[in-house]
Image (cartoon, rainbow, N blue to C red; front, side, top):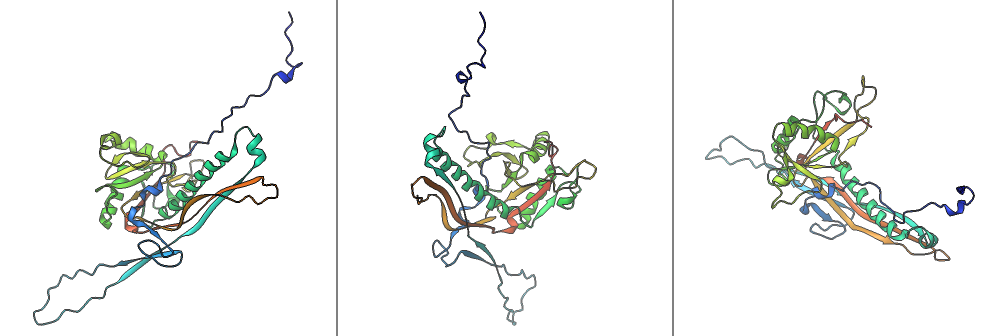
Length: 322
């Protein structure tokens, strides 16, 4: 018996669609968890430091100079002047929106409205995480791995993150007087590519402690992978990566530079004008078919204690692989 040629009845062969809408691969949002609770202030006459406007100014009263000399019995001391320094953090407006049509929502493969709402929420969180990241990665305390002396001199060999780099960063923070985020431990935010080199060295030297060894009774950071040389490390692809910023001479291309951040208590201040919120906009078209969905926020982030931040820039042994 002859087999029916499928080209004769193509209507019987149709594409099958999975009636689920999947989200793309995502990274966890990590920066907000390093903002100390007491470092969140409101603008516009609200909160513990009421003042009008969108900017909060923080004032530090400097310590007095330590005087080693003795004082005379019959001579009065000369009063010292008290000095102050200030930093300001300004809340800026951010936001985004999409429009869902009635036709797409009713006759599409899946309902678009809940998907749009979820994607809007994700965009809000990720964008604000990037705002914190921009402030933190611009800190002034920085060192470079290996023999590099700047970001552009990080080369194709060596210059990977080492135990010495961690010890140096921790020592500098302690020298600045920075407090840890958990007892004496500082937070460490590291890119997975840089973590490959550091963890290999840490495990080989017996110094790396996985989370399960100390998690009892301890609040764990999102993405935390272990402690090493005085820092609790959070591994995330949202750690700073400066693509092609290094010196690639002789390597057939430029070198990606990874920044590992070491964070102490009160390193970051957050200012809120109004809190993040999702918004279902008004339907204003003539036939009421277009429904806008969006988000908005008025926030700002700044480095509150510069001495509570340290950055180490390095290459990765697996960087530029793909």
